[in-house]
View (tube, rainbow, N blue to C red):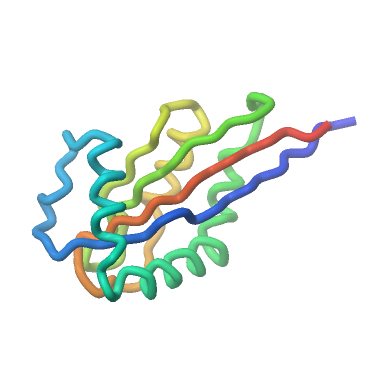
Length: 135
């Protein structure tokens, strides 16, 4: 009997900051990005756009994420993905809390995705990924 993969995906926090696109350079650490997410989550339009991102993610991007759940995967794997969404709605950068085969694949899938235009850019969103193999 083949094991079943149970995927728990919870959108954790969304936020944004009114800043230039280079406000989140490639050299920014994951913890620094989480600090920005936490600080910017109080932005008035942040929660509303977060709901939009969550809806698009569940309706359109979840199928792309499932592409990454193939082959041998560990019994459980959890990580966070910070999405940096540009003015055009495209994910300009995504950063994971831990690099694994699956998290690298998921990063590529997010970079292919597009969300509606955010109220400001860059818009930071955090998604927690939790994969469990049930036998």
